[in-house]
Length: 289
Image 1: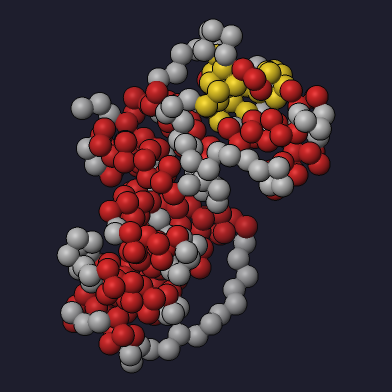
Image 2: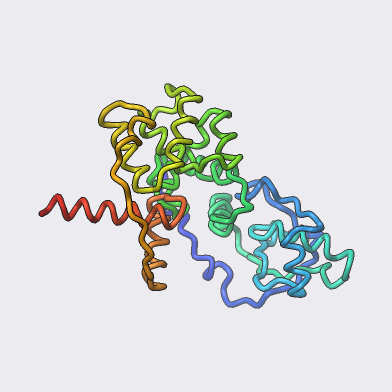
């Protein structure tokens, strides 16, 4: 089995010091292994079209691969290319798009990684596209660690998306409708035994709704009580020590480190990451006292 190190990407080295070129959008095609396969359609009234129109073009070039047959494969920038197809109706200058062109051969895995890294974290990226790429590398390297290393993400993030893919449709529907987040669903699953196949969907949904109503620190404590005492979320939430809201000024450096901590452990937002980090640090100190 190959190692993730064999596809470490250095995009600056791949692009080199070339200047952007202007390539006809009619020659730009989306490849079959591009990370973003869903939600690539761009509407005329979309925010993306408006932004490009207002700027008069792209601030950041798309990335293309020269397929040596007069055509180009879009590695990064399908939606921006789609926006150009709309804008060309208003102004012929949008017939060509500002691009970096990769001349050397790229493996399919390199294309997957480059497009995944470029799109990761964007709100308009379909969750199933994340899952498909993560699952591909999970299968290839035989585990979460290999997939995480290949894609430059945390094992927690790998776990989150792979677990979501195994949840049953009723639970996924609640997540997609924003009744609760993936993180809250995973905490509910953890409290109920961490086995999505043996947990009743209605029970999982109800547990997630209860946990969502709690503040992050209480939520973590409730899950811990559920595991240790084998009780429901409602029972676990009762009698929890009240928490006190605090307003804290945070430096830019601290926020940057908190963001890295959030990504490393797969938390959905900075607030949850901060609470979990503080909780872990406090209890570690108490344990050493």
